[in-house]
Image (tube, rainbow, N blue to C red; front, top):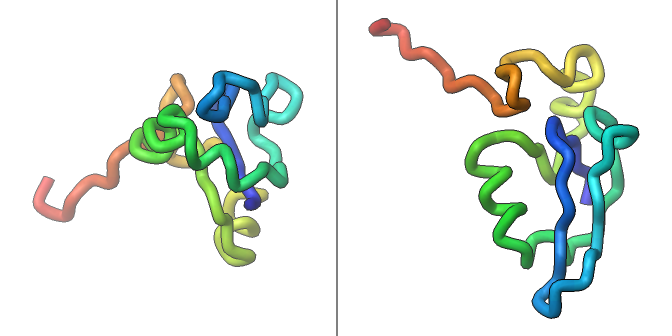
Length: 86
């Protein structure tokens, strides 16, 4: 699975063994990660707060290559989209 993480993270399996790491060197780059990272609750949390993008499509990859921090706050979370009513 192709991912782009805006934060460093360590994903573990059910036994606690590390299955994948996002380090300062691999943060903000496209990485091929094992599907097993989906089993870690941290993966779900990072998806919900939009600190990580997973299953990146070719169109989205091109957008992220141009600016991986676009629409992200200082903590690496993606800012919420403002509605037209605000």
